[in-house]
Amino acid sequence: MQHTKEEHMQIRQADKHMQTSLHGIAKRAKSSPKHRFGNLISLLSEDNLIWCFPQLNRKAAPGVDAVDYDMYEADLEENIKRMVDDLKGNRYKAKLVKRRYIPKAGGMKRPLGIPAVGDKVLQKAVALILSAIYEEHFLPCSHGYRRGKGPQRAAIELSRDLQRGRYGWIVDADIKGFFDNIDHDWMMRMLEERIDDKRFLRLIRKWLKAGILEEDGQVLYPVTGTPQGGIVSAILANIYLHYGIGNE
Picture (tube, rainbow, N blue to C red):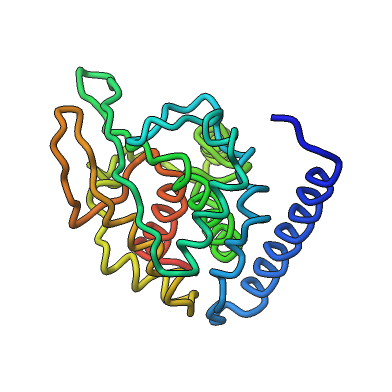
């Protein structure tokens, strides 16, 4: 998709606005740990969502509507406008999440949720906002799904601590079905600790409650969990862990 000079200018302005807004949120979150953020829904504007769109994985599988990245991009501005209009008019509904199963070691399979592209755009914007609020307070030892962190970084830090004789034991544990068992009510209560925007919170709850289309065509409506694979699921999982295991 080729952009005109005016469109490039619009994207650069949205980039500056969104980055400035996220920086301001992060700064306030750090300086005022008890502050509750309001009117976050205003950041889900057409310009900001268009700016978020190229950050999606263009090779990702399409969702239940069979619309992939290129198809959505072909009419990007109209698609985004329609979605923002639905948000403003309280008509937005999250589409079903398509579920696929990925093989794991030992013959097990990991469920993967694939949202529709339009929902991914919104989730990307919301994930950036949530990260700006909570990243300042996540513990340094928390490595999952965080920029500059990850399994390799965790292994390096652990090796360094072991070499220094700081620890004498290593416990390898796994939380069985963590993404599938997140309690929705507790998740929302955790978010309410820092967010004072009912429309923004309702949007997140819609994704938690979105139906799941199984491979056999059955539709399930979850009472717990957040689909592993959804863009917003990673930051929600980290927030849940942060409050669940104790924080600063």
